[in-house]
Length: 336
Image (tube, rainbow, N blue to C red; front, side, top):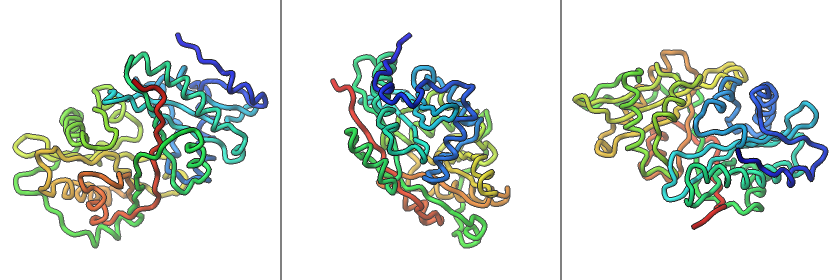
């Protein structure tokens, strides 16, 4: 088992530093809620969603997570998720944050320094000899985070809009009719159709920024998670061939905080051979109408500002509005 040096972390003796254990879930949830209350970054999970990290085959919480503690209060956290392929290099995802009351004390800098060491060792187990880059994200209006990544040598490489449809029912009334093309049928994503949905996802996302294939393991983790909504996720078929998907989630934390139900559209994709026929637009419109009937108040999603498939325009035509822009930050740690 690899061990990681905490020398750089111990320079802040007022804090305790250790990996995030399952028993830390309540403290971790409180920290995420405190961060979300100030940053409004849409990342406030439930405890059940945080617990998924411990069953994810691409996450090693024992060696790929770290938290800063002030007594029994978690005040900073960081965890990492490996990708399924290194094509042409390994974009090792990392996610973290610092309690707003503890910012400016160097916690974020120390966690990013730790991640370079931890990520390098974990990377060698999966993709020995391949180049390694660390990938993270932050909102463009979070000047402190943007500056932190710049100072640590990260480069902004992609921009995404968080898009919202805050009044789903009112938007549905004005939404143009988008019938399915002749011969195309829409079905809910049942367990029997899940592999078809994965195949469409992998084919349609080949030209998305930084995308790697969804494996059987990662797809099962996603579709088996507490947020996934199979009844509100749909797949389009033509003569038995899967053509397009819309996969959706609902985050309980949002409803707890706001009293409103939001349908989060996680994946939209059309098989490359079926593009240009309006199938994705019709399928998403169908998904939103079902969501309205099911009592959802709003819907949201993320989109690459420079999506090569024209996804941004599709969402705008249906009534989604940009709410916040984030940037993906990348730093190469190992090159060949």
